[in-house]
Length: 205
Length: 98
Picture 1 (spheres, chains in turn brown, green):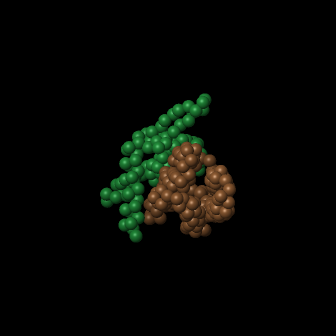
Picture 2 (picture 1 turned 180 degrees about the horizontal axis):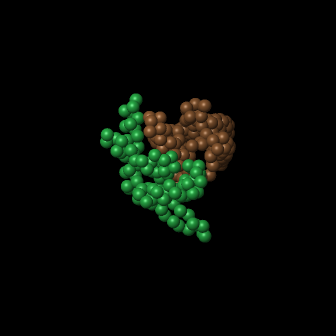
Picture 3 (picture 1 turned 60 degrees about the vertical axis):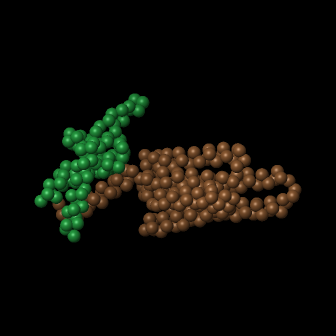
C-alpha cells in the first residue's frame, strides 16, 4: 500500500466514525435567526415593560399580567426558533442526502431534551409559586446543560455555547433582577455569534 | 519493521474498515444502518461481518422487534485493541513517509 492508501484509510475511518455517531446537518443559519427572533421578542417585551411603568398607579393586577405576556413572547420566540431550526436542518439534510430521522438524530434529541425538559418543568413550578425573578437564570442554566449534553452527538462547538450559557445563567443568578438583559445576551447575542461562526466555518463551501 | 507487523491485513478492506470504525464509536449498530452507512449489498456486508466475527473482533446480538429479527453488532475488547493498533500503525507510516 502506498502513502495515499494509508491516508485514504484514515480519512475513511474518520468519515465513518463521524457519520455513524454524530448528526451533521444542524444549520448555523437557524442559530442566527433564533438570535434575531430573541432580540425582536426582547424589543416587544421592553415596550410592554415601558408602557407598564406609565400606568403604574392603576392596577396591581395588570403588573402581573405583564409578566405572563412576557412569558408568552418568550414561548413564541422559542416556538418560532424550533420551527425555523427544523425547516433549515431538514433542507440541509436533504442537500447532503442524509436522512433527518436516524439514530444520530434520536440520540441528539434525547440528550438535549432530558436536561431541557427538566429545566422547563422546574421553571413552570417556580412560576406557579410566583417566583419570577429566577426564571432567567434557570432557563439559561438548563438550556446550557442541554446543549452541553447534546454536544457529543453533533458537529460544531455546541459544547462551548453550552458552557457559556451556563456561566451566563450563574451570573444572572448572582445579579438577580437583571434577568431581562441576561436573556437578551444568552438567547439573542450568543445565538447570533454562534450561528455566524458555524455558518462561516462549516457551511460556506 | 515492527510497524508493518502492526498493520492488520484484515482491515485492508474498505467494508471491514468501515464496520470497525462504526462499531468503535457506537455501543451497537444494526445491520441496516451498517448497510446504508457503507453503501454495500446484503451479501457483501454479511460475509465481511462473518469474517470479523470469526476472529472475535465483533459480537453478534440477535433480538426480535415484534416478529422481525433485529441483529445488532458490537465491538469486542480484542477488536478494539486490534483496530487501535492498526490505526496507530497507519498514522506512524504516514508520518514516516512525509
